[in-house]
Image (cartoon, rainbow over all chains, first blue to last red; front, side, top):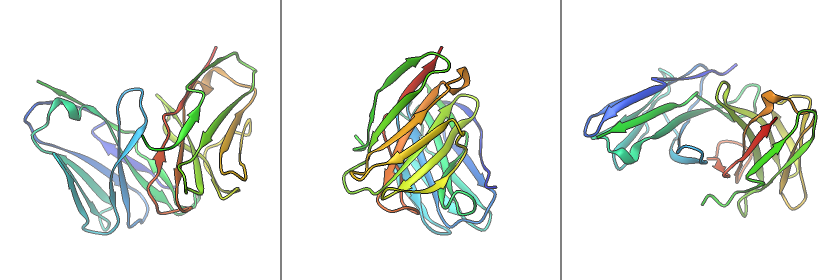
Length: 113
Length: 113
C-alpha cells in the first residue's frame, strides 16, 4: 500500500526566510504532484514532476523530484504572506488504486510578517 | 476556476439520511474522481470513473456509491449517514484515466447532525 508522508505538517515562517517541505513516498513512481489549498477552498495544481531529477519553479516556489530516493521537495524562497496555505504532495498508486493519486496529509504553512 | 462544477456547496442533514452530490467535469475530461477530506483522515481517494465505467476504488464505504452518466457528469450517493461522514467532498476530473493532473472542483461541505 502506497504511503505518502510530508514533513513538517505545520510550518510557521517569517517573511523573507527560506524553508523546504519534504515529501516521501513508499512505492516506486516516476511522477509526483504538488497542490495548494487555501482555507475552505479547492486544491490548485502547482507542479507536475514527471521524471527523476525534474525541477520546476514558479515564483518563490521550486519543486524537485528524486525517484531513486522516493523524495520530492518544495522549496520556498524569501517567503511572503501570500504563500500562507496548505501544500499537498501526491503520488500515483499503481498498485491497488490503478494510478490514482494518493495525497500526503498536507503541510500547513503560515507566513508571518 | 478549474472548470469542474460541484453542487450543492453546502449540505446539512441528519443521521440516517441519504444525500446525492453532483459533479460536472471540465469540458473534454473523461475521468472523474471523488475524494473525501476530513481533519483526521486527510484527503482520501474514494472512487474513479472513466467514460462511464468504474475504473478504481479507494477507501469508499459500502454505504457510499457513485456513477458516471453518458454526459460524463457524476453523482456520489451517501446513505445511512453517520456523524463521521461530515467532511468536504471533492470531485476532480482529468483528460485520461491515469497519469494526468487532476482538476478539482470547489467541493461540497457535508454536515451530518
